Structure formats: C-alpha cells, structure tokens
Image (tube, rainbow, N blue to C red; front, side):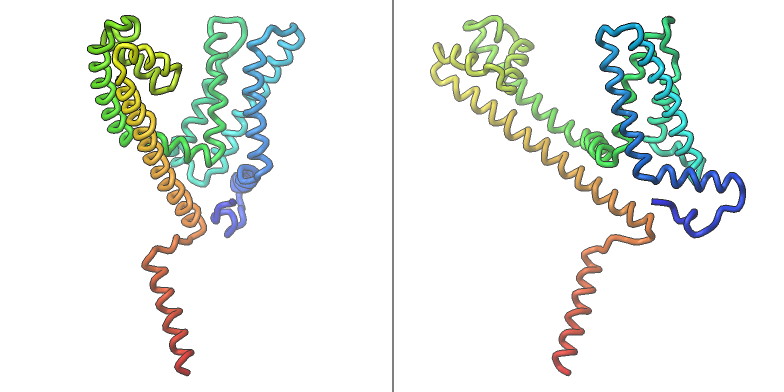
Length: 282
C-alpha cells in the first residue's frame, strides 16, 4: 500500500519523484513475488554448488551469484530510498537484518582466503524469506517473544527429567549400564523415551526384572510428551494470536482507523436497540 504522504501530495522535486516511483515499486506485489523468486533461486544455487559441476556450469553459477548479489543490493537501496523517514529505517529489526545480509554477501567468493566465509554467508540469504513474508515474520516474532514463558516450562520439564533420571539410574543401572549407568546417561535415555525412539525396547528390558516398571515409563511420557508439549503449544499459539492482533491494529493505524473495542460494540448495539424500540413504539 502506498503511504498517504505520496497519495495526498504530488512530488515536485526530482528526488521526491524518484522516491515516489521507488515507493510504487516497493509496494508492487509483482516486485515482491520477484524478490521471493530470487531468494528461492539463491537457495537452489547454494544447493547446486554442493554437487560436482562441470566448469561451464560453475562459471554460470558464479555469474548468477554476482547477479543475485547486485539485485539484493539494488532492492535494499530501493526500500531505503522509498522510505519517507530515512532516520527510522534502521529502527526496524528486519531492515537491519536485511541490510546486514546484503552487506556480508559482498564478501568475494573467488579462490581466496575469504571464499569459504563468502559461501557460508550466502547460505543466510535464505533467511531473507522470513523478512519478506509477513506471516513468517509474525511466526518468528511469536517464537522469540514466547521464549521467556517457555523458559519456565523448560525449567519444570528439566526438574521432571532430573527426578526420573535419578530414579531410573538407581533402579535400572544394574540391568543395563549403557542406558542407566549414571544420571547423565539416564537423561539421554529418557530423551529417547520422550521422542518414542524404540522406547518399548527399553521398557521391556526393565520389565523383565521389575514387572511394574511400565508405570515409570507411562507416567514420564504423559508428563513430558503430552502435558508439557500441550503447554508449549498453548503458549506459542497465545503469543501468535497477540501478534496477529497487533499486525491488524498496525494496518488499521496506517489507514487512520482503529479496531473497535468491546465497549464500542456494546455502545453500537445499545444504539441499534434504542432505535428499534423507538420504531416499535411509533
């Protein structure tokens, strides 16, 4: 969407005309899809370089890499020039992230000491897909904002892990030293049980000595794989819903509108009810 500053006024100066044109390019859906396609091609190009290629193909991939680098540099320049407030351009994390990826991509990739670093840096071009697609930005932002709440869940899960590992190491170390020899090995075994990686083999082995040991495994799986997993999903979904609401509010703010609150809806319903009652009496 073209910002109001450009819609409501006609650019007079030469730079304002360029800024206006770049704003239209940046807001164009076709240009956005083209940028996404270039990112995909860049990712495929990185994957192709892991295979043995003919010299002619290697030369072609090198030319394509130079083109992609120049295109990304031009794209971030267009976005910077089109921004009406240049000082606040780098206040956005995603603008800083994109600019950093583009700048480090300028590292040469020829047969020099920086060649390996240059190739590794180009792998991170794929992450630009996150900054381009709003839904991916919301998803990543939600995951980051959910980390503090997830930290407490992880702490509680570690406590459960530690208790079960101590019990398992005490009871089952004589049965299988490899799986239950000490508490650290027991923690790895419990992680295997939680991920359902041949966990029944571990259970049946201890059931030969302790027939009721299945209670140990089932209660652990219920707590770790079911209860804690649902808690993590609930936290992430809640944060994602908050981010979606924030994104909707930002879009409305750009159009000079506000999202109606519950009190606003109640007031409108009261007005409609009053009008209906008045009409009924008449």
